[in-house]
Image (cartoon, rainbow, N blue to C red; front, side, top):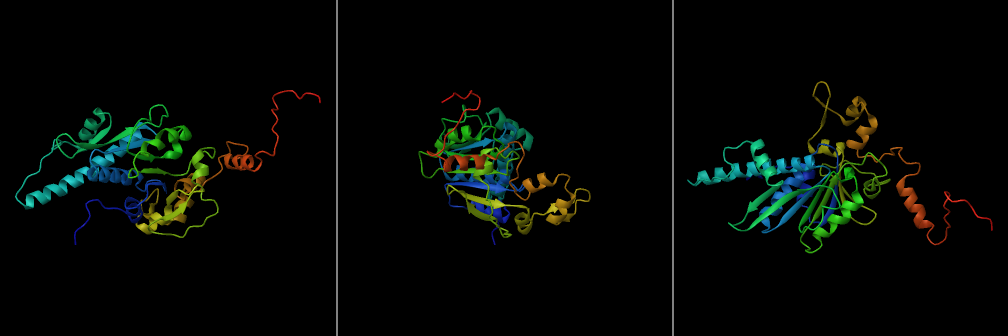
Length: 299
């Protein structure tokens, strides 16, 4: 039986093959969000000529991590192609033969963090890293892959800039990946919060929809464990149960947010943002607002 060139955990496979134009990935930390986005970008570039994929990352360093994932995946593909060519007495060469992963990464970085897949001598597809800046994350056309969107400083401004990037073609797609925000005033705290929904452990992850109807693929520590990736003891390195890992965690709130995907109140706001929004909608056209910074005038 032929083995796949790129191997995934079941939830990664679920997302890679999802036939959706726009969706979110709400995944536990270190489950391979960047690897999955890198693989999807490579697949899109190889299958579509003259196509662009834009990584909008919480920082340029995170964007570089996506590029490294692509390089690692591409090296695996090249090795497989070489084996197939040698079996037929042929030879495959590339302009990165003999270079280490760090050297290849430097080449990509020197090209302004772009990866190109050439379909001919003049036609190529590319991926490019874009900083989460509303002023610069606009004017492009193609796919948009957002990484760690709950840590974009200006989520609403950046989303306003990048959403139109996919608008010209129904085949273009947008994937937004993250864990829950540490700050409950961040817009994603409201957008991605599943509320009172309960999820059964699923080795392929669970799907649910946001209030506005966008699909969200959710993978917490229990799902990841069922898929074959456990958590490990901080001292011995042996696999431990999720409950034991939480017991050993120095910060229970951080563990709950990063691995159990809980949306926790951060205490930075007197009234949570979603409650303010709900109150404004309920009181629309029927409530009077007073500016308490101005002195009241006598009737």
